[in-house]
Image 1 (tube, rainbow, N blue to C red):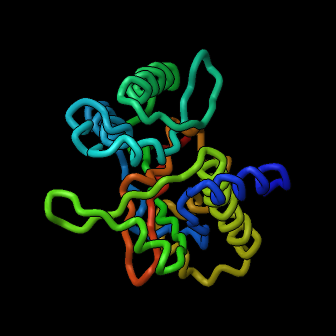
Image 2: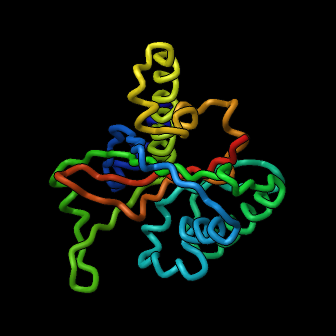
Image 3: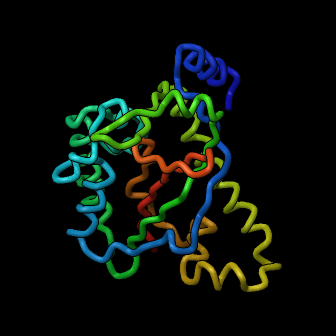
Length: 226
């Protein structure tokens, strides 16, 4: 994290942003799944963006504002939040346009990777976020825009470092990684010879899982392979 970004994040924390701390990223062997047709791709995008029939997943606009989405407008790739349904629908249309330009191959060449990002938080801070929704315990988190940018960047950097470290040890690989990831081993290594393009990516912080004080969120990436 740059010094300037770190300062901005600290100011947001002082103003009440949830003090979540990035820990690590897990890439489970079952985290790679093929998207075998256009209808399935559109449904996945609608789910990730919480649009169409999946808009009901958003019960609190504060939660949806925590998500970070890849957007493509006029050929320029960017990442930002989109709290309102109108913003998410715009991204959906942009990605549809981008997908039409890239022409996904659904014969094993369009793959979604689901990574599990782990974060930590003090127990007393977590308790402050506890809410009741429809009679059940729930949690509501608020993250500042610079804090979200920092968390997202940390997730991406960690994932890239995993690929880099595995690539260095490729020659000494005893076969365990190949057994775990199978035909997706080179994708796990982020091999540029395998990856044609990234169609979409997002970090969903509106759907957090909490286990033993650790908070988990999913980072999704849709790859188009060569």
